[in-house]
Image 1 (cartoon, each protein chain N blue to C red):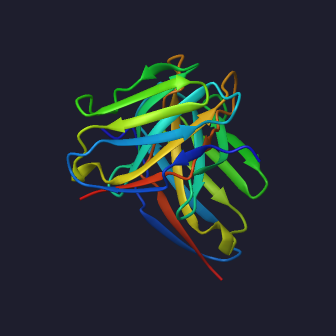
Image 2: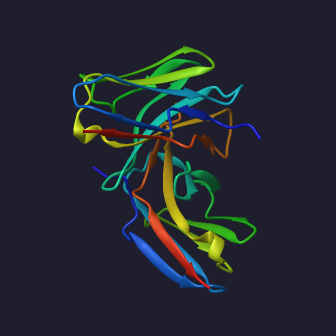
Length: 115
Length: 113
């Protein structure tokens, strides 16, 4: 089965440190999303790309978060500097969109803890 | 501003009975609605979707109903099984040409054997 791979699965870091999360989307998928899951907000959309171009990153705190797709097999989400409030599970998802039903595949997530 | 709302944080149902999960939305620009299921320590998995031009879509034990005038959709699971116990997310896609998809906060379903 094709799947979305996220690394690392868990990350514990100290406040102020840089954190980089990686995602390998399913080969052939043209759209990649980054979501963050928190207890209060559910799944928040941070950013998404289509054909590697950023379409919307309005959900990200711009001063500390950045998302890129250096190539079709890798998407990255970087936090610099990290803060305790960034602690959450970060999900990457990918899909191929041309018509419905618009379901896409999620990775297993990166659980980030900032202490 | 929560555009997709799941007002029930949890729901408990007896095995074999119907589970009804509800979702309300505020944005008239949504053209597709989706339901995802999530088990602990896993990513959400796509379950079923419905276009805004339809009012019902069925797939096996899962049926999604859409009431556009009320800006409300629901997911029915019949019959409910213990393996259905999970968090269910309602999501909506904005029809602005991209694929921006907004999720609700989720409802945790417990199916008791």
